[in-house]
Length: 288
Image (cartoon, rainbow, N blue to C red; front, side):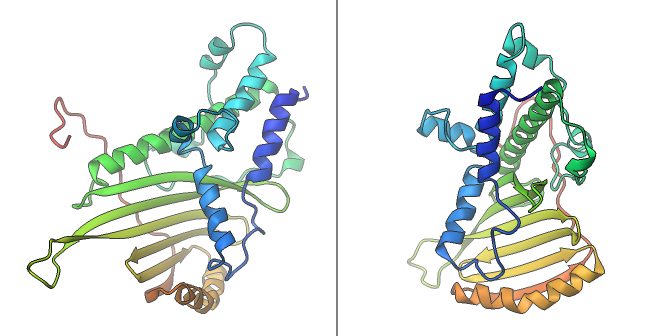
């Protein structure tokens, strides 16, 4: 069945705003328009939908979660019966990793099959897929709250954590997913003068996980503390490892052009190990 006009428009608007693999070029990170574009993609990722609505109560905001909701509403309007009841009865389509280990980063992602080999999805299948997308965003919101409240489980210092998925499209309009983890560690350090108060210095850590069709799985670890920055790239394929090592000098120059002091920059084979989130069930939360 053809999509309802409202759902089709919402889908076209969403696809038009998603990042594309050919949008950013190597060495363009120092450009202000590139930085602003990345900020916009993160802001519209769906993780902040509720806070954006609280500030601007308009359902037309460009936001992934709100756009999915608009498509669901349009599709349910074509069905007979109570729309809310129909949606609540849906069994969402979810990735196996989200079901087995919902509160972990990164989630295992399988590359979607080429569009030419797949049949068009029915309305019910589309609704299940959209419901699974909403579940994934909601899990990321819950995971971020748990890690921020618990300090990341293993981190001794208070930590603010954000986890989000950033969908993007290939030149062939095939959807892919990048997973981001952003942490702020507030570390207290004593100043040189005894008369001054202890100053809090924040260390920002960014983890980016993406699985590319030809390059394979890639993981990026970036740590920023004041003007000092270090970065580590993990590649599973040997050919990709060689290619990344060739690009490291360009990355170093780009970081230095931003006025940063590069303390460490390397590429390793394999994948990093991330801390495991453990839910603790207590009658009274002593950390509240």
